[in-house]
Image 1 (cartoon, rainbow, N blue to C red):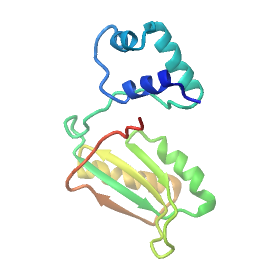
Image 2 (cartoon, rainbow, N blue to C red; image 1 turned 180 degrees about the vertical axis):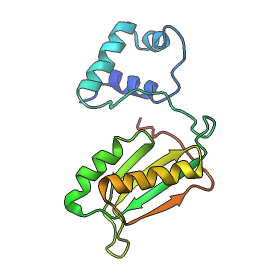
Image 3 (tube, rainbow, N blue to C red; image 1 turned 90 degrees about the vertical axis):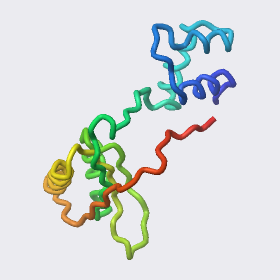
Image 4 (tube, rainbow, N blue to C red; image 1 turned 135 degrees about the vertical axis):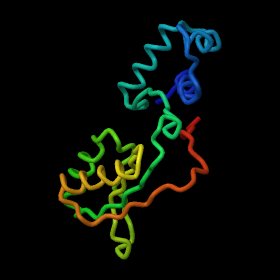
Length: 154
């Protein structure tokens, strides 16, 4: 069960953490605990599965990844877990989901792939298709980004 202090730490981690030598100093002062205690609590939250990872958020378009495609794949249910895990290991795949969809739609595994060029996106999709022998797919390219945020739970 999360304590009030744990919730406040998670709230802090969901925001922009300052790039400085003591990024938890202000939070420690607010909570009345040491920075070391905050780090220990973060480690505990990670070990218990409340926190999956801490990572920098890259503005992919500014970093040169201007072509993005959501690929909808038709994967047999008995292969979905294996294929999904292998697709998810690829560095250019940022999201990978197996979803329940209407039978008429057909596509049930979805990946988001980021690339620097149209050719790079096409090559990556073809490589993933060939390595897992998944031939039925459709690439849906992003034309305009209207919103992109990280989810805030508290």
